[in-house]
Image (cartoon, rainbow, N blue to C red; front, side):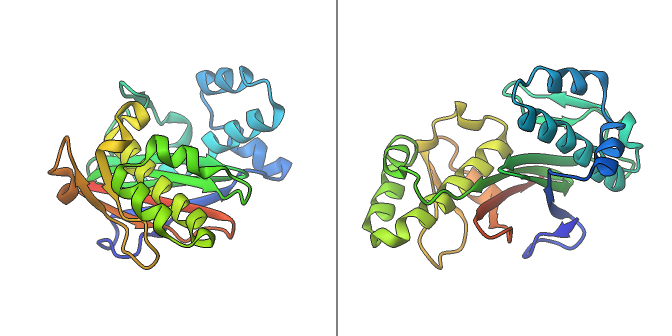
Length: 228
């Protein structure tokens, strides 16, 4: 796992893992899975999505095994009210939070020791009609800043804003069930990633930290972290 730049040493990590694996690796990864995970995979009709889901679960189990000291196949998971996953048992050295996101052929995993975490990974599409999405999901401030940029800078700014917002929403465990227009994140070129303001829980602007993550060209990713 890679330490997140700007965070306390040995506390916050991420991993960007390719989901398309050779057959030998695939067999090893799938051997870690629970019957429930295999059943969930079988329900996916698209063979590429099915394969990437199963491989991704195996990658997650192997990565957590190294972090919490429990055998990959024995790790148990819980799911929150809105689907946020967590570990069934704490590690010997305390609580470990994790979150995942996949896009294209990659899986992003964020891990924090003693805190909460959310991540988002997006494959950037040059043909994306982003303006209607921004008007629906971005706050008035974010929309004003986005559409004030030169047009050639708007698509990267859209992805910066989107991944930062979704990482935070996944971190708090609500996803887009909470209105995404009730808080502002930074998005301008050169501006540090940050939760700038929240009109429902204003204290979250101080509790949560945002970082962009260095990932593959053509992708955009962010992580949100809160200490316990």
